[in-house]
Image 1 (cartoon, helix red, strand yellow):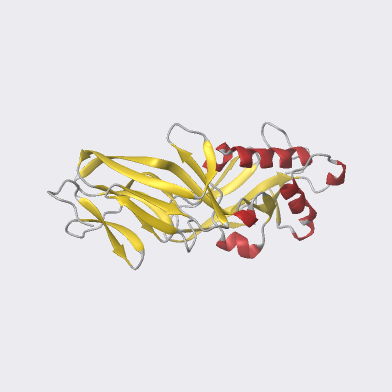
Image 2: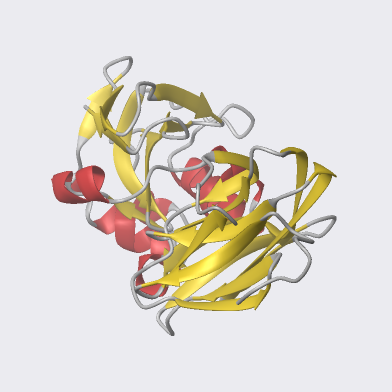
Length: 260
């Protein structure tokens, strides 16, 4: 793909099926604008729409929580990236190693990301909340704070808190214990109380119920023993929490692992 008259200083090159952002003199920039969305699986289809936008479609057994600008979250199989340089020239969409972003050239000082402002892929079979194994804790992506805005996830967490008698506002449990879980394929820890007889709870979401039935093999921690370690690709990996959900902030780390 080529652009005429230097209208845009950054273009997209296809390299081994990967769409890479670079400038006309092939000097790639690492500056991005808007959200950097990670976790797109192998087998995702990348479609270059034009010099400023692309679309990523996930395989049939995957879905994406998508938030368009000014719209509510929805579940889809496609996410779009649209980039616009508002001051200067050169802001292009990028897809590399399961990550989408708007990459700015040195001559672009203000860039706007449109299309899917946020996109969080998940495997359909990993919907809901279930206990996480040590292998999953090391390999699956970290929970993202934006996930607390998604209706399906909020509903599943609310059911969890109700089942264990956690405070409905803070999510805090009486025991102070936390258990490692997968929340739609993302690693977090939730407050819980092992003494609660959940068989007496009459309205637990089916996916949550599956998780509760597996608690015998759960990885449990007493507060405040959860720590986060950045093992590669950065320096910062911090323990964060809200509404009884604990996670490791991996925004500045390539490999961030939660430890109990």
